[in-house]
Amino acid sequence: MSSAKKRLQEILEQEVENTKRRVFLVEGEDDVEAYNQLLNRQFLTWESKWAIFHAGNKQKVIDMLADEPTWLGLIDRDEWSDERILQEQNALSNLLVLPRFCLENYLICPDEIWEALSENQRAKIADGLPQLKAEILADKEKWIRHGVLWTIINPLWEGIKVLGFKGALLDFNNAQDDTKIQDVLKRWHDFLEPQHIFTQFQNQLNDVLALEESEQLKKWVHGKPFYHLHVHQVLNRLLGQESAEMRKNKILQTCPLPNDLDFLYKMMGLV
Image 1 (spheres, rainbow, N blue to C red):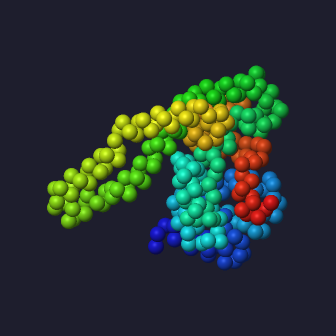
Image 2: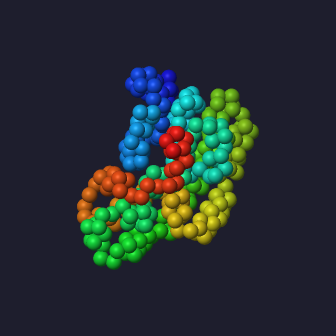
Image 3: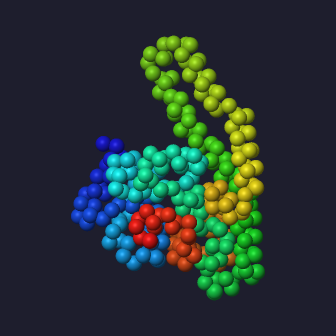
C-alpha cells in the first residue's frame, strides 16, 4: 500500500466514518493549525461540516483527492505556473491552489505584519512602518532571485523523470546497446542545456522585477526561508525574542483576514 493510500485509510478510519464531516486536505501538520486559526476567526460552526487533515506533501494531496472526489484539498502554489495550475485543476475539480507561493507568504509582507501588531508592539519600532518596511525589504531583490530560480530549477526534476531518468538508462536491455545509451544521455543533456536554462531564469527575473512589490512578495519570494531566516530575525530584533512558530501563530491570529482566500470559503460552502 502506498503512503498516500495508507494516510487516506487512516483519515477514513479515525474521523470520516464516525462523523460524516467532509475532509479538507492540506499538505503539512503546520498547515492544519494555520487554517484552523483562519477559519475559526470567521466561521463559528465550520467544524460541524469540515475536518482538516494533513496529507504529508503536495503529491499526496493530489493522489488522495483523485481517490476521494468529495474531499477538498489546498496546496501551495510554489513553483507552479498559471498554466500548470489550470492543467491540474482541470484534472481535479476538488484541487485548490494557494494564490501565494506558500503559507508563509502571509507572514512576510510589511504592511500586513504592521496591521497584525498591537499598539505596544508598534511603539517599539522607532520609525514605525517605514522602518519595518525598510528592514524587511533590505535584501528583497536577493530573495526574489532565489524565488525565481526556484521556479525554474524545481520543474526540471519532473521534466527529466518524464524523459526516463534514470530507469530508461538502467533497463537491462538498454544497458546492452551503446547507441541506446548515447541516445538517452543526449536527450538528458539537451533538456538540461545550461544556457537555455539560464536564459529562462534571466527572462523570468526581469519580468518579476517589473511587477508591483506586493505581487513580488506574495508570489515570487519563497516565503518559508524568507520568513524563518530573515523576517523572523528582523522582528526578533525590533520586538524582542520569540520562537518563529509562536510569532507565526500570533500574526495569523491578528493579521487582516486575507481576502485572497475567499475562493476557499466559497468552495467550502461557508459564504
